Structure formats: C-alpha cells, structure tokens
Amino acid sequence: MKKVRKAVIPVAGLGTRFLPATKAIPKEMLTIVDRPTIQYIVEEVVASGIEEVILITSAGKSAIENHFDYNYELDTILRQKNKHELREELARTSGLIDVVSVRQKEPLGLGHAIWMARKVIGDEPFLVLLGDDLVRSRIPCCRQMIDLYEKVNESIVAIQRVPMDQTHQYGIVEGEKTDFERTVKVKRMVEKPAPGTSNSDMAIIGRYLLMPEIFEALGKTTPGHGGEIQLTDALQSLADQRGMYAYEFKGKRYDAGDKLGYLKAIIDIALDHPTLGEPLRDHLKSVCDGKNCLQ
Ligand code: UTP
Image (cartoon, rainbow, N blue to C red; front, side):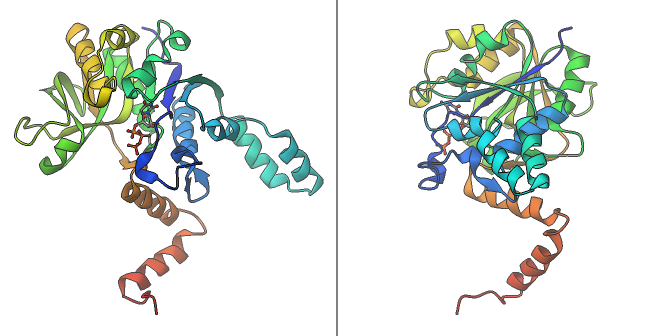
C-alpha cells in the first residue's frame, strides 16, 4: 500500500460570496482570530503527518504563497527590535511544511483545479482539502481519513449529516453501511440533488483522500454546470471503477467561504482561546441580554 504523503489545497476560486472583501485579498487570507483561514488548514495537514502541500493558485493569490515563505526584511526588523517571540512565531509558520504552487489559469471548477496537480502528485494517493473548509477535531480530520485508508486502501470522501431540506446545497452520497466505524461504501453520488430525488442526508465536505486514477477520470470529464469541470462526476467514475468509501468524520466543520460559517468559526475558536475566551463569553452574554443596542 502506498503512503499518503501529499495534500492538494485548491485556492484559485474567485471568492465572490465575500466581495468586496475579497476584491484584493484572497478569501483564504481572511483572519480567524489571529491567523488566516489557510493556516488552520495547513496546520491540519501537518498534524496529520503529510510531507508536502500543493497549492492550486491563481493571479492575485500570491499573499498565500508569501504567508508560508520566509520574509527576510520583516525578520531583520523584528530582530533589531528584539521581538523574538514574534520572530519565532513567524519562523514556525514559514517552516510548517514544504509548499509547491501550481497555477490554475482560469477558474474552471474544483475538478479542473485538482487536475492541475497531476504532474506533482504522480502515481500516489493524496489528500485534497478545500482552502475555505475548516474542521476542528481532537484527531485531525485528515489523520482520521488516513487511518481508514490504511485499512481499506481505497479513495475516501469525508461526509457530515445535514438536514434533509439542505441536501440540495451539497454533493450527496448514497451507499451501504460497512463493518468499519462511521464508514459507508459509496454507490451513488449526486451533485446538489433537487428536493425529493435522493433520500440520503450524507453531504460531502471539503476533505478527500483520492487514488491517482482520479486524474484519468478528470481528464475524461466534460464541463458541466456553469462550464466548470465538476469533481463529483469524476468521483462517481472512480467509485464505479475501483470503489470508494464515505467517512463520517469526528469533529465540527465550518464553511469559512460563507459569511455565516466564517463568523461561527471565529466565535467558536475565540471562545476556546486562552485569553480571549472569557471576555468574549461575557460580551456575548451581554449581547444576548440586549445590552448592546446602538444608541
Ligand atoms: P468555492 O466554490 O467554494 O470557491 O470552491 P469560490 O469559487 O472561490 O467561492 P465563491 O463561491 O465564488 O464565493 C471551493 C474551493 O475550490 C477552489 C476555491 O478556491 C475553494 O477553495 N476552487 C474553485 C479552485 O481552486 N478553482 C476553481 O476553479 C474553483
């Protein structure tokens, strides 16, 4: 069985839901408490034992690459000012992991973004994490997926249960229970099913562990909805050809590419922060008591 060593993080989307905030700043660089969203995602990858990150980027996203790079000028100034703790924190970020970037020249969809990584990935299984999907858990979500992969040796999509009236917002998995904990064998995948067309509540989230055969399937996929190359069609063909599992991860997921999801992530992470948690809790209580109205 081949080891999972690399993770692809597509960050080439336009982030239109966050305009105008994302006109000049990538949405993956928006701050959650004290670091950008993308850093939480890269930290999950590192904590899962991955050796290399492949960022799929586009024009205007160089801030993400710079964030994980060494900044000589800043380091020199901080050293002159004896700000050693900050220097250490910055060195920790730039030394997190090896990062390689590949340009997606046009935003032709998530499937196309992943396909751009084919030469860097080669013939090995790999992870995909969406650059705006945050998961908080005791055991990193990717680690949970690698642990399952080591038992099943097949592709895995991470899923969460969603209310039936929200299934039309997700890629939905239908399948059968297996002997593995929280794991379903995938039969069918439907992208954003119209109400009443699927009775499954298992929604795919932004974590995938994929066999390299996905690239062949993506290469054959023709553009679908909105002229984009969808990932779901290629996943279905991989499931038919080799088999695929859906894993209900342990943890909480936030769609940080959506305004409400982003706010929820900020609040939950800040409430767990060693110095911010308590004063924020007090503040939220006073807001709930109606003591925060504008005068
Ligand atoms: P989204 O659809 O959530 O991102 O794609 P978006 O297109 O940037 O956002 P909105 O809908 O316009 O607000 C999920 C992930 O896939 C990446 C995005 O950067 C995001 O991390 N993506 C999407 C690409 O890398 N390339 C694409 O062509 C499309």
